[in-house]
Image (cartoon, rainbow, N blue to C red; front, side, top):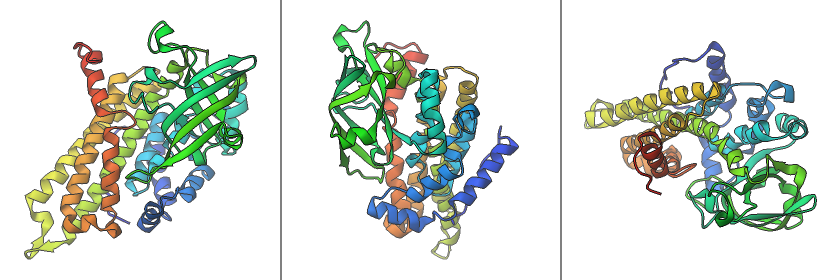
Length: 395
């Protein structure tokens, strides 16, 4: 196990410190070889995900009255950060922790009682959501997947892209249009969200998943949706209000994703510091050289700053606020800090950074993705510019 760089316990409760210890124990079987093998074979980390379900971590954000742990978003952030600090890939489980929030915040009481207890005990896995489309990209208002109501069901046709974990999810949260964009009161109106039974949809050929091979082992797909039948009772929220349903989960997603980036960055810096202390060139440890020291120290300071912004956003979210700047700013800072940490680690390891056995090249590939997903940093910057600073909108 790689050396871990100590991180500030600022604001953490005793229980959250215990969570760190528990996740450290859970991660022990999932060592570097486990992740190298998974990356090589492009396999899903089933064993790690199952362990998280079995110990109740996947249901921690579900209220106790529905069988969950009733934990806070900060508790969940500690879990995801610590997974990454141990070299694990938390992206495989993040959506499974927060996607149910759409049901919790916008579902009927009948829907909550029907779905949440099953999600909590792991018998029903909701780890996938379909929003992005090939021609829409970051402009979600331009999605074309369309749902038409016919009696007590909707008929859906369209496509989605970069939809992850379909092969390991029983349900999918699906965003559609029920009114054409040009006919809606505003671009974000006229969209509707559904909870779709993936098993039935794939068995009947209503949804066909075509895997997309990417530079990282983050299982994702393009979906073709043909005459998909969804019962009206599986509509989450009111017809035409689906954009709000999806957006309400974005704050949680940003906080959790930010926590992953911080954890992965700290893991990389821990690896770099350990190697810099051990590796000798020209008769001295390379860690004595400021050319090695300074990038590692700079990335560490940036990660700690992003962490503080993350906790601020989490506190505001828990208080019921809508911390748009804070969650997006935290994601922006953490993704940039992670990339700097990856570069520092890569340069520290030198030629060995490209060797699969050291694991740096895998993390280096993974560290680039956060600049564009789950939201592009350019979109974040534009949002800060016009939403927070009052500059003219650029789009």
